[in-house]
Length: 224
Image (cartoon, rainbow, N blue to C red; front, top):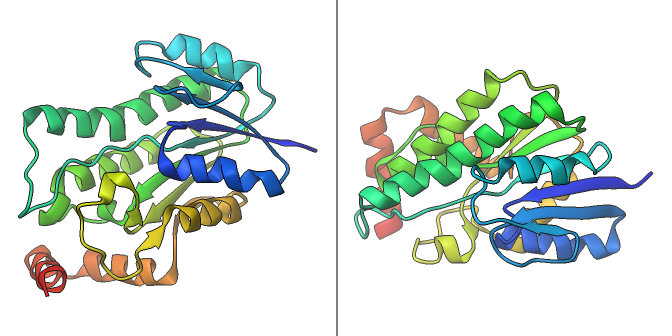
């Protein structure tokens, strides 16, 4: 039986690596993107304004696994602070797009699973990328309260992409190729999982240590 994958935000670098790695697997790939990606992919200008077109596109696909890659990061304190427009875009892309599309999908589409690409930043928003972390945390909390039959959240640390190119590499940084491999290997799981044991351990430290201490350690380690 062929499994159908629908990539929402299909022009992201991790999604592109997923498509390339699929050449050796048996998934049928579809996707939605604001850029031209491929013949089976739907190009849109705005995910929310064109949500009905997206739903019609997905309705034709038999019980797909949907993966939300939508991501936006314009924040890297102390090097760069986001302006008002970038703060708006952070919440719009990281939270509103996947959440509002998911609300409509669970009411109208027969799907196999909803998968969300998240971040360790969702555990506890920190000084370095507070707005980004808050947007991911808001998405995760909203997913928990949604009438969702089956979902998977994958929390990554830093993945080397253009989005994160100006950020220093903390421990457990991985390539976009490795991130795609982890996604493929995790599709049968559910709940919230981590890209590695190292990221899971880091998340526990972030969760239980006081925020001021976490910010101090992070600034020292990245500046050292």
